[in-house]
Length: 248
Image 1 (spheres, one colour):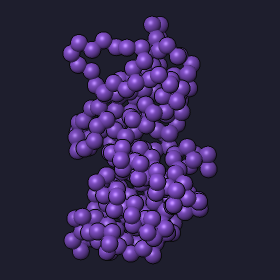
Image 2 (cartoon, rainbow, N blue to C red; image 1 turned 30 degrees about the vertical axis):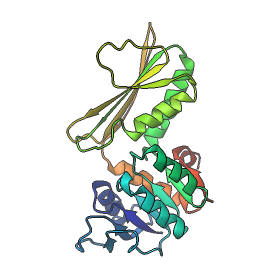
Image 3 (tube, rainbow, N blue to C red; image 1 turned 135 degrees about the vertical axis):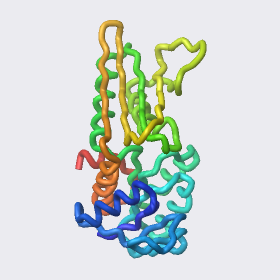
């Protein structure tokens, strides 16, 4: 399978390229798109999607949410499956993603780790078992991450809201801010070179349950995105998430 890699020169783009070059999966990076393309790349790389080739099987995106519109336009114009592995999209951009999924197979996840997908399912089960417990979400990432809270933390909250319909998010906490029963706190920590840690803390008056996933290397997200690409090229138009991959 041949892919077009958006964000080829970024850290995650490099991780995808290394895995493909190592033959971890039968996937080849045919070309890349990156605003910093300068001709020194090991595969053809273009600054814009207008220049990029469309004779590929799938697009894998690890770039920046600011290119979402151009990325979706290119994918829809060429009827190409798209693995969208970039977070930080605005509500308007997310609406565009949902619309694009009516025309092409589109895989969109806040986190491409199988372990995080399992963490989310366990968090939902725990919240259901303790309906009156307080819940806090804490995420920690490297000091270069631009968006906060992480897309994964927000995805965990959205999943918890399916079992707690009245839940409201509380982003950080300071000053005179007494906790309300329905709030779920979300806290972001940025430091060093941490690949990603997500914790869900569920506490009652008598006990606390802490669910934690820690990524040891960001290469695991590249692995997940490539697995998603292999899954996606066999699918009809629609919006796909990690649970669809797990079930597969």
